[in-house]
Image (cartoon, rainbow, N blue to C red):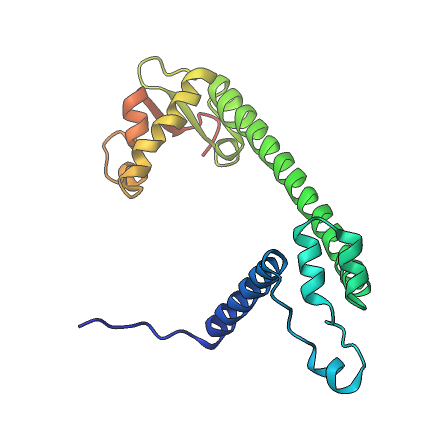
Length: 202
C-alpha cells in the first residue's frame, strides 16, 4: 500500500506559483517563434484602461532577447515597480552585507585570539612552568611523571592532542582521576604526566 504525503497550503501555493511562472516564461517564447497571438488583457479590452501588467507577454519576450529597455517600455509601470522594489530592498541588502562582513571579521578576531591565548596559556605557560592560569589559581601543577619537572611547550601541546582519546569514549577519560591510583587521565598516561598540588599551594 502506497501512502501519499499530503502537501501543506504553503507547498500548494509554492507549486502553483512555480507552475504559473514556468508557463509565463515559456509561453511568450513559443508565441515569439510561432506567431501565435498573445492573450488580450481583459481590463484593457473592456475599459480601454491598461492594467499594470499590460504588455507583460511582449515584455517577457523582450527580456528573453536581452532587450531591457523595450521590456520596460512595453509594460506600463513595470520599470517603476522594479525600481521601487530595488529601492525598498537596497537598505536591507546593504545592512545584511555590512552585518555579515562584521560578523565574519569578529569571528576571525575571536578565533585568532582564542588560538593565541591557548598557545600562550596552556602550551607555553603550562609547559614551561607547569601552570596555566587555571592551575595557578587553583594551586596545582602539571609535571613529568619521571622527572617531576614541567614538560615543556611541545609536550603540553601533545598532551592536549591526546585529550582526544579522553573525549572519544564519551569523555570518560576525563573521569579517570576519580579512581586512578595516580590520578591520571588517559592523556596523562600516554604522555607520562601527573597533576599534583603545588608545593606553595594548599
